[in-house]
Length: 104
Image (cartoon, rainbow, N blue to C red; front, side):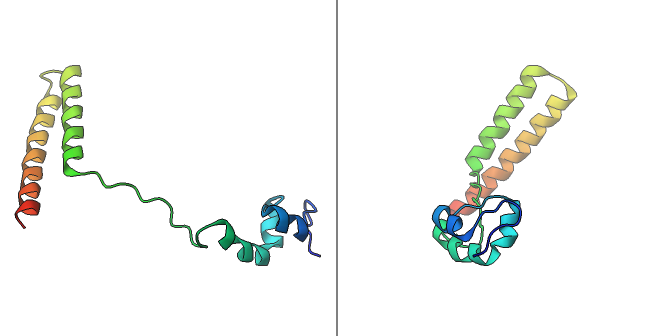
């Protein structure tokens, strides 16, 4: 029976708990891990979560909120003026995207 040289964890405990005793167990029980991993997870390859893709409307609202906050904190500042120009440019781009996606 195989047991971990670091913590003494053995095959029977691994089979019962499906957990490992220490970091050295990963090396000691590598062949066994491959057999029980599919029972614990949907697969043996980690795919992670996919972040949601924000919609154009959500991006527009976020830009509008940020511009409003800058204007509140520094009204009339050169930065606020540049940000307003950027906001207008973004809205024009978003409008064009909206027209293209809804005319097809």
